[in-house]
Image (cartoon, rainbow, N blue to C red; front, side):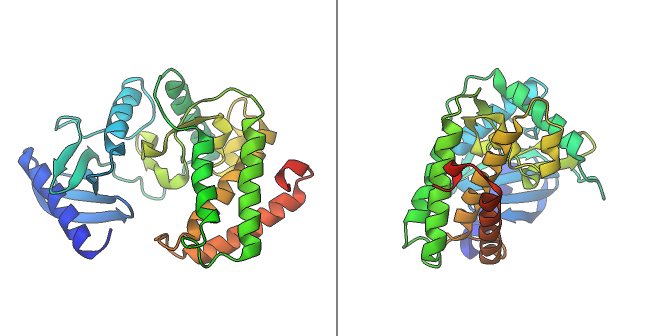
Length: 284
Protein backbone atom coordinates (compact mmCIF):
# COMPACT_ATOMS: atom_id res chain seq x y z
CA UNK A 1 0.00 0.00 0.00
CA UNK A 2 1.10 3.59 -0.50
CA UNK A 3 0.61 6.98 1.11
CA UNK A 4 -3.06 7.84 1.42
CA UNK A 5 -4.11 4.18 1.21
CA UNK A 6 -1.93 3.35 4.22
CA UNK A 7 -3.52 6.19 6.17
CA UNK A 8 -7.02 5.05 5.21
CA UNK A 9 -6.25 1.43 6.07
CA UNK A 10 -4.80 2.43 9.44
CA UNK A 11 -7.84 4.54 10.23
CA UNK A 12 -10.13 1.65 9.30
CA UNK A 13 -8.25 -0.72 11.62
CA UNK A 14 -8.30 1.74 14.50
CA UNK A 15 -12.00 2.45 14.07
CA UNK A 16 -12.84 -1.24 13.86
CA UNK A 17 -10.93 -2.13 17.02
CA UNK A 18 -12.38 0.82 18.92
CA UNK A 19 -15.92 -0.12 17.89
CA UNK A 20 -15.33 -3.56 19.42
CA UNK A 21 -14.39 -2.10 22.79
CA UNK A 22 -10.61 -2.20 22.41
CA UNK A 23 -8.59 0.86 23.44
CA UNK A 24 -6.55 2.25 20.54
CA UNK A 25 -4.39 5.34 20.93
CA UNK A 26 -1.66 4.44 18.45
CA UNK A 27 -0.94 2.19 15.47
CA UNK A 28 2.55 1.00 14.55
CA UNK A 29 3.17 -0.28 11.01
CA UNK A 30 4.94 -3.64 11.22
CA UNK A 31 4.72 -4.66 7.57
CA UNK A 32 3.46 -3.01 4.42
CA UNK A 33 2.98 -4.86 1.13
CA UNK A 34 -0.28 -5.94 -0.51
CA UNK A 35 -1.61 -6.06 3.05
CA UNK A 36 -0.90 -3.75 5.97
CA UNK A 37 0.06 -5.25 9.34
CA UNK A 38 -0.33 -3.00 12.38
CA UNK A 39 0.25 -3.25 16.10
CA UNK A 40 -2.56 -1.39 17.84
CA UNK A 41 -1.77 0.07 21.26
CA UNK A 42 -2.40 0.00 24.16
CA UNK A 43 -4.82 -2.90 23.51
CA UNK A 44 -1.90 -4.78 21.90
CA UNK A 45 -3.71 -6.30 18.95
CA UNK A 46 -2.20 -7.29 15.62
CA UNK A 47 -4.42 -5.94 12.84
CA UNK A 48 -4.14 -7.16 9.25
CA UNK A 49 -5.78 -4.90 6.68
CA UNK A 50 -6.38 -5.70 3.01
CA UNK A 51 -8.41 -4.16 0.19
CA UNK A 52 -12.05 -5.22 0.20
CA UNK A 53 -11.57 -7.27 -2.98
CA UNK A 54 -9.19 -9.61 -1.12
CA UNK A 55 -11.38 -12.50 -0.04
CA UNK A 56 -8.52 -14.65 1.30
CA UNK A 57 -8.98 -13.20 4.79
CA UNK A 58 -12.10 -15.28 5.38
CA UNK A 59 -10.29 -18.45 4.39
CA UNK A 60 -7.37 -17.57 6.67
CA UNK A 61 -9.60 -16.87 9.69
CA UNK A 62 -11.46 -20.16 9.30
CA UNK A 63 -8.30 -22.18 8.80
CA UNK A 64 -6.46 -20.55 11.72
CA UNK A 65 -9.36 -21.42 14.03
CA UNK A 66 -9.43 -25.03 12.90
CA UNK A 67 -5.68 -25.47 13.21
CA UNK A 68 -5.49 -23.79 16.62
CA UNK A 69 -8.33 -26.02 17.86
CA UNK A 70 -6.31 -29.10 16.94
CA UNK A 71 -3.22 -27.81 18.77
CA UNK A 72 -1.16 -26.74 15.76
CA UNK A 73 1.61 -24.14 16.25
CA UNK A 74 -0.14 -21.19 14.60
CA UNK A 75 -0.82 -17.59 15.52
CA UNK A 76 -4.36 -17.17 16.86
CA UNK A 77 -7.07 -14.56 16.52
CA UNK A 78 -7.47 -12.12 19.40
CA UNK A 79 -9.73 -13.84 21.98
CA UNK A 80 -11.34 -10.57 23.13
CA UNK A 81 -13.37 -10.09 19.96
CA UNK A 82 -15.48 -12.27 17.71
CA UNK A 83 -13.24 -14.30 15.34
CA UNK A 84 -14.37 -12.98 11.99
CA UNK A 85 -13.51 -10.66 9.14
CA UNK A 86 -14.54 -7.03 9.67
CA UNK A 87 -15.32 -4.65 6.80
CA UNK A 88 -14.88 -0.89 6.92
CA UNK A 89 -14.25 1.86 4.37
CA UNK A 90 -13.29 -0.48 1.53
CA UNK A 91 -11.01 -2.70 3.62
CA UNK A 92 -11.25 -6.11 5.28
CA UNK A 93 -9.71 -6.22 8.76
CA UNK A 94 -8.77 -9.20 10.91
CA UNK A 95 -7.59 -8.92 14.52
CA UNK A 96 -4.96 -11.31 15.83
CA UNK A 97 -3.06 -11.99 19.04
CA UNK A 98 0.12 -9.95 19.27
CA UNK A 99 3.05 -12.07 20.44
CA UNK A 100 5.94 -10.24 22.04
CA UNK A 101 9.13 -11.45 20.33
CA UNK A 102 11.56 -13.39 22.50
CA UNK A 103 14.74 -11.25 22.63
CA UNK A 104 17.80 -12.78 20.95
CA UNK A 105 15.99 -16.07 20.43
CA UNK A 106 16.59 -18.13 17.31
CA UNK A 107 14.60 -21.18 16.31
CA UNK A 108 16.93 -24.16 16.08
CA UNK A 109 16.70 -26.34 12.93
CA UNK A 110 15.32 -29.20 15.04
CA UNK A 111 12.62 -27.00 16.60
CA UNK A 112 11.74 -25.53 13.21
CA UNK A 113 11.35 -29.00 11.69
CA UNK A 114 9.33 -30.21 14.68
CA UNK A 115 6.94 -27.25 14.51
CA UNK A 116 6.46 -27.67 10.76
CA UNK A 117 5.87 -31.42 11.16
CA UNK A 118 3.20 -30.70 13.81
CA UNK A 119 1.57 -28.13 11.53
CA UNK A 120 1.52 -30.65 8.68
CA UNK A 121 0.05 -33.32 10.96
CA UNK A 122 -2.85 -30.99 11.82
CA UNK A 123 -3.32 -29.99 8.19
CA UNK A 124 -3.35 -33.59 7.02
CA UNK A 125 -6.77 -34.20 8.51
CA UNK A 126 -8.44 -31.11 7.01
CA UNK A 127 -10.56 -31.18 3.88
CA UNK A 128 -9.97 -27.68 2.52
CA UNK A 129 -10.26 -26.51 -1.09
CA UNK A 130 -6.95 -24.91 -2.05
CA UNK A 131 -4.84 -24.52 -5.20
CA UNK A 132 -2.23 -27.13 -6.10
CA UNK A 133 1.41 -26.08 -5.73
CA UNK A 134 1.73 -26.25 -9.52
CA UNK A 135 -0.91 -23.50 -9.78
CA UNK A 136 1.43 -21.23 -7.84
CA UNK A 137 4.30 -22.22 -10.12
CA UNK A 138 2.16 -21.30 -13.13
CA UNK A 139 1.67 -17.82 -11.66
CA UNK A 140 5.44 -17.39 -11.62
CA UNK A 141 5.69 -18.76 -15.17
CA UNK A 142 3.14 -16.24 -16.43
CA UNK A 143 5.08 -13.45 -14.76
CA UNK A 144 8.34 -14.54 -16.39
CA UNK A 145 6.66 -14.78 -19.81
CA UNK A 146 5.14 -11.28 -19.51
CA UNK A 147 7.77 -8.80 -20.70
CA UNK A 148 5.58 -5.84 -19.76
CA UNK A 149 5.53 -6.96 -16.11
CA UNK A 150 9.23 -7.97 -16.04
CA UNK A 151 10.91 -5.44 -18.38
CA UNK A 152 14.32 -5.58 -16.65
CA UNK A 153 14.70 -9.36 -16.89
CA UNK A 154 17.38 -10.24 -19.47
CA UNK A 155 16.50 -12.73 -22.20
CA UNK A 156 18.94 -15.38 -21.00
CA UNK A 157 17.65 -15.08 -17.43
CA UNK A 158 14.06 -15.17 -18.62
CA UNK A 159 14.76 -18.39 -20.51
CA UNK A 160 16.53 -19.91 -17.49
CA UNK A 161 13.69 -19.13 -15.11
CA UNK A 162 10.98 -20.28 -17.52
CA UNK A 163 12.75 -23.58 -18.22
CA UNK A 164 13.50 -24.24 -14.55
CA UNK A 165 9.93 -23.53 -13.44
CA UNK A 166 8.44 -25.63 -16.23
CA UNK A 167 10.74 -28.65 -15.93
CA UNK A 168 10.88 -28.91 -12.16
CA UNK A 169 7.13 -28.40 -11.75
CA UNK A 170 6.57 -31.28 -14.15
CA UNK A 171 9.23 -33.51 -12.59
CA UNK A 172 8.00 -33.00 -9.02
CA UNK A 173 4.36 -33.35 -10.02
CA UNK A 174 5.03 -36.62 -11.84
CA UNK A 175 6.72 -38.30 -8.88
CA UNK A 176 3.33 -39.39 -7.62
CA UNK A 177 4.16 -39.10 -3.92
CA UNK A 178 1.83 -38.31 -1.04
CA UNK A 179 0.32 -34.83 -1.15
CA UNK A 180 -1.57 -32.87 1.48
CA UNK A 181 -2.57 -29.39 2.62
CA UNK A 182 0.51 -27.17 3.04
CA UNK A 183 1.26 -23.75 4.50
CA UNK A 184 2.68 -22.68 1.14
CA UNK A 185 5.37 -20.28 2.40
CA UNK A 186 6.63 -21.35 5.85
CA UNK A 187 9.83 -19.31 5.54
CA UNK A 188 11.38 -17.61 8.60
CA UNK A 189 9.47 -14.40 7.85
CA UNK A 190 6.25 -16.30 8.52
CA UNK A 191 7.42 -17.83 11.79
CA UNK A 192 7.11 -15.99 15.10
CA UNK A 193 9.61 -16.76 17.83
CA UNK A 194 7.55 -16.64 21.03
CA UNK A 195 7.63 -17.95 24.58
CA UNK A 196 5.15 -20.54 23.31
CA UNK A 197 7.70 -21.74 20.78
CA UNK A 198 7.69 -21.10 17.01
CA UNK A 199 4.27 -20.17 15.60
CA UNK A 200 3.36 -20.04 11.92
CA UNK A 201 1.39 -17.10 10.53
CA UNK A 202 0.08 -15.90 7.13
CA UNK A 203 -1.96 -18.93 6.08
CA UNK A 204 -3.26 -17.25 2.93
CA UNK A 205 -0.70 -19.05 0.74
CA UNK A 206 -1.98 -22.56 1.52
CA UNK A 207 -1.84 -25.07 -1.30
CA UNK A 208 -1.65 -28.83 -1.82
CA UNK A 209 1.51 -30.74 -2.58
CA UNK A 210 4.31 -32.79 -1.04
CA UNK A 211 5.57 -31.68 2.39
CA UNK A 212 8.98 -31.17 0.78
CA UNK A 213 7.57 -28.13 -1.07
CA UNK A 214 6.90 -26.49 2.30
CA UNK A 215 10.19 -27.68 3.73
CA UNK A 216 12.02 -26.03 0.82
CA UNK A 217 11.04 -22.63 2.28
CA UNK A 218 12.57 -23.44 5.67
CA UNK A 219 16.25 -23.04 6.59
CA UNK A 220 18.25 -25.77 4.87
CA UNK A 221 19.37 -27.41 8.12
CA UNK A 222 15.73 -27.97 9.12
CA UNK A 223 15.40 -30.49 6.30
CA UNK A 224 17.84 -32.78 8.07
CA UNK A 225 15.53 -32.99 11.10
CA UNK A 226 12.16 -33.36 9.39
CA UNK A 227 10.97 -36.97 9.86
CA UNK A 228 10.78 -38.97 6.65
CA UNK A 229 11.68 -36.14 4.27
CA UNK A 230 12.69 -37.29 0.78
CA UNK A 231 16.01 -35.50 0.42
CA UNK A 232 16.16 -35.85 -3.38
CA UNK A 233 12.67 -34.40 -3.73
CA UNK A 234 13.55 -31.67 -1.24
CA UNK A 235 16.58 -30.70 -3.33
CA UNK A 236 14.37 -30.32 -6.41
CA UNK A 237 11.77 -28.35 -4.46
CA UNK A 238 14.44 -25.97 -3.17
CA UNK A 239 15.52 -25.10 -6.71
CA UNK A 240 11.89 -24.71 -7.79
CA UNK A 241 11.06 -22.41 -4.86
CA UNK A 242 14.21 -20.38 -5.51
CA UNK A 243 13.13 -19.93 -9.13
CA UNK A 244 9.66 -18.80 -8.01
CA UNK A 245 10.87 -16.16 -5.55
CA UNK A 246 13.47 -15.00 -8.09
CA UNK A 247 10.73 -14.46 -10.66
CA UNK A 248 8.76 -12.30 -8.20
CA UNK A 249 11.80 -10.07 -7.61
CA UNK A 250 11.68 -9.02 -11.29
CA UNK A 251 8.04 -7.92 -11.20
CA UNK A 252 8.08 -4.20 -11.93
CA UNK A 253 5.67 -3.70 -9.03
CA UNK A 254 7.75 -5.67 -6.53
CA UNK A 255 8.23 -3.81 -3.23
CA UNK A 256 10.69 -6.23 -1.63
CA UNK A 257 13.66 -4.28 -0.19
CA UNK A 258 16.69 -4.54 -2.49
CA UNK A 259 14.70 -6.93 -4.67
CA UNK A 260 16.66 -6.53 -7.91
CA UNK A 261 19.99 -7.23 -6.22
CA UNK A 262 18.52 -10.35 -4.64
CA UNK A 263 17.06 -11.35 -8.00
CA UNK A 264 20.50 -11.23 -9.60
CA UNK A 265 22.07 -13.09 -6.69
CA UNK A 266 19.43 -15.82 -6.78
CA UNK A 267 19.81 -16.27 -10.54
CA UNK A 268 23.45 -17.12 -9.86
CA UNK A 269 22.40 -19.60 -7.18
CA UNK A 270 19.96 -21.28 -9.58
CA UNK A 271 22.66 -21.68 -12.21
CA UNK A 272 25.04 -23.14 -9.62
CA UNK A 273 22.39 -25.56 -8.32
CA UNK A 274 21.52 -26.76 -11.82
CA UNK A 275 25.21 -27.17 -12.67
CA UNK A 276 25.55 -29.52 -9.67
CA UNK A 277 22.46 -31.45 -10.71
CA UNK A 278 23.15 -34.44 -12.91
CA UNK A 279 19.46 -34.92 -13.77
CA UNK A 280 18.52 -33.80 -17.30
CA UNK A 281 14.97 -32.88 -16.24
CA UNK A 282 16.09 -29.67 -14.58
CA UNK A 283 18.13 -28.50 -17.54
CA UNK A 284 15.63 -29.25 -20.32
